[in-house]
Length: 273
Length: 249
View 1 (tube, rainbow over the protein chains, first blue to last red):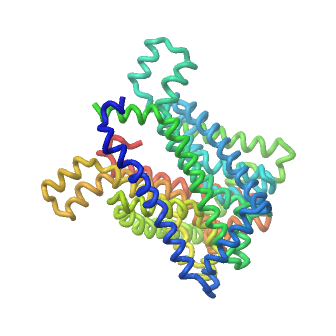
View 2 (cartoon, each protein chain N blue to C red; view 1 turned 120 degrees about the horizontal axis):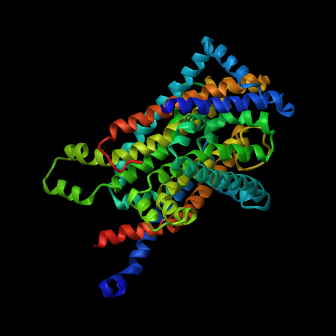
C-alpha cells in the first residue's frame, strides 16, 4: 500500500544518507564527550576524578571479565525475578481492584499507605523478617516497584470504554474472552506506562537492596568501591549501571511497542484520514 | 460511606497482623504485635526528637524537589525545543539517567559532610532525571498546529511560553514530579540510612542496629505516613492544576 502512495524515487535515494546522519547525531556526541573527558582527565591527580583511561581499565577488568559477570548475574537475577513478581501480582491485583468499586473502597487506603512507605526503610525490616539472603532482596525489589503497575492496571481496567463494555455484553462474550479481547488490550497503555515506572524503581532498588547485609552484586561492589575511596572502580560501576539501564530501557521499549502496536496503528490510521 | 469500608480494610489488616504475631510462635521474635507497635508509635510521636528527625527529612525532601525541578524544567524545555538537540543529547542522557544517586553518597559525604547540603544535592540529582525526561516529552507533545498558529500570529516569546508552552507541557511535568516525589523520598531516606545524616532514616538505622524491633516497625509506619502525606499533596496538586485537562490519567 505505502509503496503505491509514497513518491518512491527521492525518498529512497535519500534514505541511506538520512540514516547515516541520524546515527552520527546519536553517536557522535557521546564519542566527543568521551574523547574530551579522556583528554581533560589524562594524568589527573584529583582523587575524585581519576583519569578516564583508569576508569575504562577498571570497567574492563572489574566487570567485563568472568569474575565481573559473576557479580552482575545475581543482581540482575534479583532484579528480573522481583520485577516479574511485581508485574504479575501488580496486573492481577490491579485488574481485580479495577472491576469493583467495593473492593477499591475496602483496600485502597491500605494500598495507598503501603505504596507510601519508601522501600529503603523496608531493608532493616526485611533483614529482621527474611534474613540476609536473596529472598529478602527480591522481596524488597518486588514490594518497592509493584505500585505503578498496580495503579496502572487498576486505572486501565476501571476506565474501559463504556461502549466497548456494552458491545461485549451484546456479543455475549464469555468472561475470559472479554478479558482477553476487550478489557486487557484497552488497559494495556496504562499498564505499560506503569510497568515502565516500575522498571525504573526496580533498577534503583538493585543497588539499594545491596546496601546492607550483602557481600556480592553490582550494588555491593559499587558501594564498596565508593566507601573505600576506590573512585576509578566507583565510576566504572556507575558507567556499568548506566549501560545496563540503557539496555533494559531499550528492551522494554521493544516490548512496549509490540504490546501497543494495535494502538499505534489506530492512531496512525486516524491521523491519515 | 467509602471511609467506613476503608476503615474496615485497615482494621482487617491490623487484626491479621495482631493474630499472626500473637499465635505463630516462629515469628514471635521478629514481628511485634500491631497493638504494641502502635503503642510505641504513639510514644515516639509524643517525643520531640522524632519530630526533629521528621522535620529534617521533610526539609531535605522539599528542598531537593524544588532545586531539582528548577534545574530540570528549563533544561528540558530547551532540549525539547529542537529535534536535533534531542538527538545529540539522547544517548548521554540515557546513560546517566539510570545511575542511582546512592552510588555517589560516599564521595558526597567526603566533599560536603553529613549535613543538609549533601542530602539536598543527592535528592536534587534523583529528582532531576524524571522531571527532565517529562519536560522534554511535554515540549514534544505540543500541538504543532497551535505552535504554527502562535508563530503566524506573531505572539511574543514570553506570551507563547505562558499561554502555549507551559499549559501544554504542564501535565507531563506534573507526571514527572509525581514520580520524582517518591524517588526523592527514597533518596532522602537512603542518604540518612547510609550517609549518616540526621533524619528519620538514621533513627531507623539506629533502632535496627540496637535490635529494637518494635521501634523499627513503629518508625517504618511513621515514614509511611510521611509518604502518604507526600502522595496526597501531589495527587491534590495535580487534580487542582489540571482540572481543564481531560486526558489526565
